[in-house]
Image 1 (cartoon, rainbow, N blue to C red):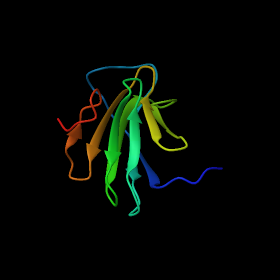
Image 2 (image 1 turned 45 degrees about the vertical axis):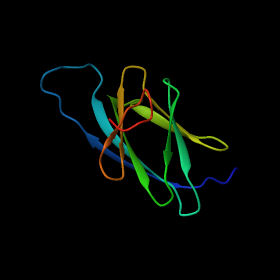
Image 3 (image 1 turned 90 degrees about the vertical axis):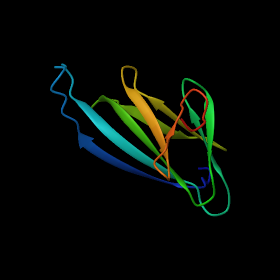
Image 4 (image 1 turned 180 degrees about the horizontal axis):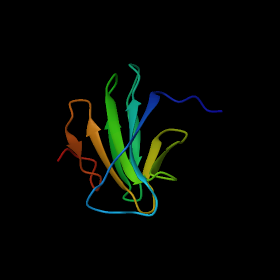
Length: 109
């Protein structure tokens, strides 16, 4: 198993959506990716392919919204982390200051 710089934490909470009734319940999951103090951690937003580098000691919060069966996922690769929403879900990302990241460019909105 490869060694990965950074930590990950998951927070799941049920999301009630009164506007829409869905067959499969949706959830909102928040994943916090943290770069260690030794270096940046590259995050690739799939399927767009944009890259965001988390500065040393900072973090990035990924918010997945989707079916409880698969709202989204995080995969550790050899030298980066890949994040992707579920097939019918949504994803957004926020830096450690709470500013939203553009998933198409990897830049701040």
